[in-house]
Every structure is written in structure tokens, then in C-alpha cells.
Image (cartoon, rainbow, N blue to C red; front, side, top):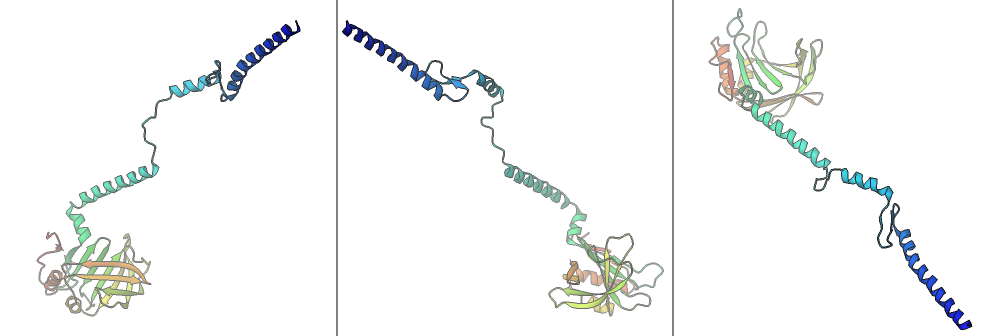
Length: 256
């Protein structure tokens, strides 16, 4: 009997151990599942009740698979390119307009002696290019000399006419510093600098067909311009000075 009881005890112990060996892996696997999940069959982890709402929310969102990520730098560059393209188109349209071409390349306007004045007096011509105007003024009245008058938005506009020092560079010649009159005209955004020339003949003799001018005050550029067709204008001004009419009153590269 003692032997039989021992066998039963051993068998009972084995049964309990087997049962514990079955339950333990399940509990261990449950404990290894992530939070919000469990393992009801002891084999795999499945979502718990708390995760179903999140899964449904994910499923209801539209798919973004294949959609490119936003490249903000690329978008900025694309916007700049489009802006440049539009500007280029507008510039191309302007280049089809004769007046805009004259604005870029420059044009001459010639004026005869005013009515009521003696023929050959106050003949003048001005050349305008972009934002600068340069006038060649002939003698008239008591003034027997000539003048160069610069106008631009960069020239100071004093309330009263005043004498200033300016530096003028013509073509590649050494710059010269001279006294000049600085004044403004009411209701005009341009200031003026007038340089005296001893005689109109001296002015005309020194004219070149292509000539550049760089005017500075206190070391700062205030007017820069380069003309063309200087010899044709010189010939026309000589006609006016001799009391004859101009052949043309406008000269530009378009020939109109």
C-alpha cells in the first residue's frame, strides 16, 4: 500500500505539473503582447477592444500612398521660375513697342528758335535714354555761350538754384571737376545740373557720334548717359544756328 500511495502521489504531481506547464506559456505570451493587445489562443497577439476605434479611424482616412512629399524649397524655386517667365513674356511684349525700344536705346529731339525770337537763337536738342536727359543748349539773348544740362531723378532738387561742384567724365578721358548750377523745376521729379560751355562752336566741334557722360557729385553718380547719332545732330544744329529749318526733328535708331 505505501508503494501504491507513492505512485498515486507521483502521478498527481505529474498531472499538476503538466497543467501548470500548459497555463504558464499562455500567461507568459499574454504578458509579452503590446499594450492594448492580448493573446486569447496563446499563439498570436491580436488587438484588444481599445484599439478597434483607432483601426477604424485609420481605415476611414484617404490613402496617401504614392503621393509625393511636399518640397517647400522646390515649390519656392518653381514660383520664382514662373515669375521670371512672366517677366520675360512682359519684356518680350515691350520689345515689340517702338517707343519702348527708343526708351532703351535713346532718342534725340531737336527744337528750333522759339516764335518771336531771332532766327539762330535758342536752338537746342536733347537726348533721352532710360532715366536721364541731356540737353545741348545754344546761345540766346544776352548769353553768347552754350550749355550742357543734365536731368535725372538722382540729381538733388534744391528749393533755390545753387552753385555746386560736380565731376564729369566723357568717354575714357580724365574726369574734370567744375562749378555748375543745381536747380529743380516745380512738379517734376527730376533735378537739373547746368554746365556752361564757352561757345556753341566749342560744344559742336567736340561732339562725337557715340559719346558717354558720367556726372558725379560728392563721389556719387547722379547722371550717366551715352548717346548715338551725335554727328547727325551736330549737322542739324548747325542748320538751326544759321537760321535754316531742320531736316528732321527726331533722330533714333529706328529711323523714324
